[in-house]
Image 1 (cartoon, rainbow, N blue to C red):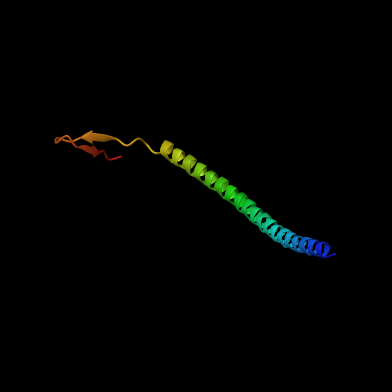
Image 2 (cartoon, rainbow, N blue to C red; image 1 turned 90 degrees about the horizontal axis):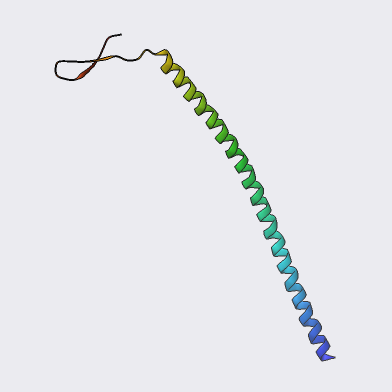
Length: 89
């Protein structure tokens, strides 16, 4: 009888330990799932911000190209000392 009681006590202790371990693992799993969700949201926001920034940069690039086409080419002449001088437009 003593052997069976000792074995039952060992099994009971092991069962409690495993329950605590499972509880800890469930908590860790929940924390990690929350972290993943947060990171996915941040990733989505960063992607949107990146696309917005690229659109702004592309528009700015197009505006610069349009302004350059509208401006007449700057003319220079060389003075007596060999320096370039911008000619009046």
